[in-house]
Image (tube, rainbow, N blue to C red; front, top):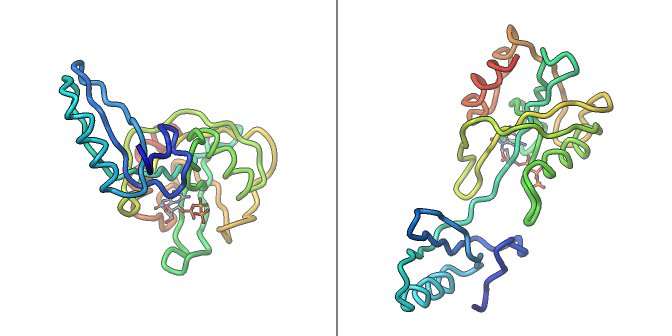
Length: 188
Ligand SMILES: Nc1nc2c([nH]c(=O)n2[C@H]2C[C@H](O)[C@@H](COP(=O)(O)OP(=O)(O)OP(=O)(O)O)O2)c(=O)[nH]1
């Protein structure tokens, strides 16, 4: 299958996935492709073998993980104000970033918090929901606990603010993040 980058997506450019659903309704990602026609050809090849599985091609979705980072008391969560790009500057978000190919979401969260805020944090659980940032990019929010360090706006942000249940709505959140606020509030 030329053009495939393997089930773990070793190529950052791969943007089409070949999916399979078996008799029990289980869906698995079989391979990733950079070129849609190659993914379609692979799907047709499998279909032609006449097994009972279903094969189809779908756009690969890349995850952006946002961290609902709680302080030691568990009563405050960190919001970060973006400094770039221009279209998003001034809006508030949960610190985080894109999951790299082959990286787990928890590892990406911990890496982004180290890079962006200079802290050591441990990823917790995923909150319900997923929101499209733009086609092919999906935002998930995960909880995180601060283990070490005092968060600083080292990259991508120009201000940080700890918010509690009474101030959670006081900043101008990015639209996708607003959907996650009820779940975050529930934990405060
Ligand atoms: N990090 C983060 N990004 C968000 C949130 N909500 C939201 O819409 N976004 C958008 C903003 C960006 O378009 C995109 C994430 O990009 P990013 O710039 O944070 O990712 P990154 O650190 O991996 O950046 P890069 O390496 O690709 O430059 O998702 C959020 O809560 N956290």
